[in-house]
Picture 1 (tube, one colour):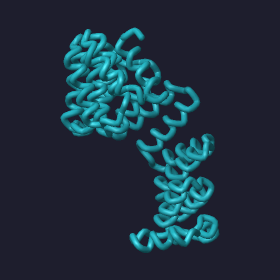
Picture 2 (cartoon, rainbow, N blue to C red):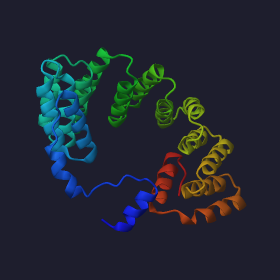
Picture 3 (cartoon, rainbow, N blue to C red):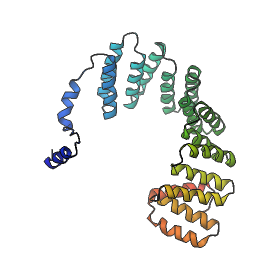
Picture 4 (spheres, rainbow, N blue to C red):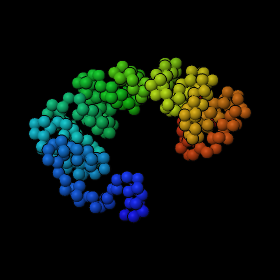
Length: 287
């Protein structure tokens, strides 16, 4: 290891991580003395991206758990899923259900079914999870995301609104509902939802961008421009906002300001240009 780095690490009290090759044999020798320790070791292996060892530790946790192995089995199923061993993951989730698991295994099976394109079966599993935990906002939003992926915005909106009702202080849920409403061209309702998200997370520049899209759709260009300016104020280094401002100002016949923003947008990269094109399509602005 570079001695200069060690000197600097010592100076600033930074813990020095040993070489990974030196750590590996020791880590592989470690075994949990009980189910909790084995699960903790498995979680650490997942964090490190070591799926094989994660599976080994979770298997040991299942053995150590005896009759109370449901959660360890769910962990094991998740490790199989991360390592793209879907049949093994499915088998563990189903076993966890037989052993008394109620909601979480259904969610795991739902995710696996979605991977195979079995959307209707995936929905059915999420609904079973919600039968067990009807006020779980995360399950409702997963169902909403699934309906969105299936191209069913009305059902996606209903699920998102249930998530909001279960956890009204989560800004993402309000934003998500607002985005679905924007897609459905119900712009004033979308603005109500996005406004709720902004009230809960006023420093999130992305929310002002989404508000701008809804304002533009609602034929409120002044507010749309103001919203993009607020987004840009929150993140001045995001050149995409200057590009969008330039276009909205040009569409609003404010040519001098449009040219100024377009000049500032000269630093946009390929990703920014791609995003700008998508926004223009969404806002029905011709290039």
